[in-house]
Image (cartoon, rainbow, N blue to C red; front, side, top):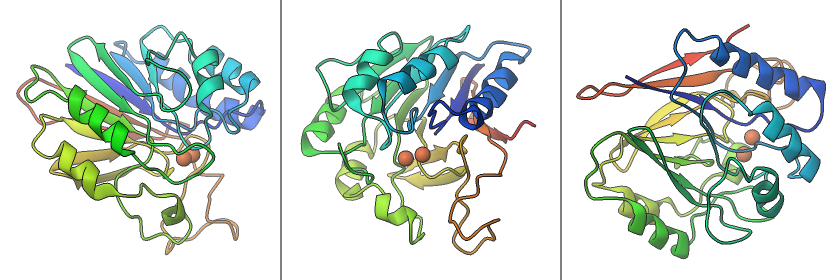
Length: 250
Ligand SMILES: [Fe+2]
Ligand SMILES: [Fe+2]
């Protein structure tokens, strides 16, 4: 059994509010009766991409288990690379921060779906070529593609301004590949759907939750800052379909 604790969108900014929400999740995971095999955090690690925010991210994610991170639209490549050097292994400098990481029997292809200075997502032609080159045609073990922006339209008037653009070329690259699941963040809500024939599993937002446009929210904002932070727990057992549970510890 291989267990992934999938966290997303802590948006650390030096505030007690953000820090305590992340700690609620990391302390919950630390209390598991077996250690998770890996913690994956799918972006918006820092709220403004500032160096002192990455120092806080590094401190809060210094856990007893391997931790993988990737950038979201609130992150900034260069300070992320510098501040999280012990968490990131990506050739080159600045943007994009792509990674291929093996943790135990699992491989994680961590795609930088961000556009510097913008909130929408886009995987450029160069990045698609990189992705096509690193995805194997067969793989003996679970293979995950992770990125901040999920490849879907939410039909949400605010969030869809910041969606992943140009999804069709990505689908071409991913179709037929031996991908166990696509793991995402950004939309601050637990989601399950499919893309290019693969499961898409989005982790809840730690900092806040974004309900559908037709759901009630506590204020006029499209964001619910009072909803409990949560995480996705992905459990892979050889020969069986992936199982995912969502938890909102409190
Ligand atoms: Fe976010
Ligand atoms: Fe985001």
